[in-house]
Length: 143
Image 1 (spheres, rainbow, N blue to C red):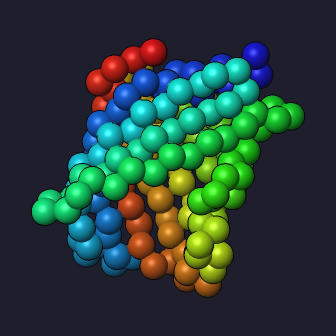
Image 2 (image 1 turned 180 degrees about the vertical axis):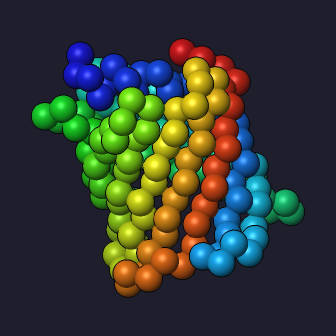
């Protein structure tokens, strides 16, 4: 098992949390609850993320990545990107939404403890920072 795959196996399970979207100046845009289900099957990594916004139907997105050459690569219908560790407990995922190729996201995941993690998205539109997403999550069902 590759080091990346072994380390990512620590976040397999079901995570619930809160997304807070802010402007680059720190003003709150919106806040909503989430549920992230992650699994690892051989060389395939799967994520299902459901967003729960007030007075809206839940939105669910499925993402699939594959391990290749020690990297986790995302190349599915929605995003294109790769994943790597930038320290013992910090994961970095730069990616682009295929429906918005002018927008780039750099996601940083901090694995604080076995049951708590935080994620931060820096969202750039044509090279300009337009939004920051702060995500606080806790494990509700482990693998």
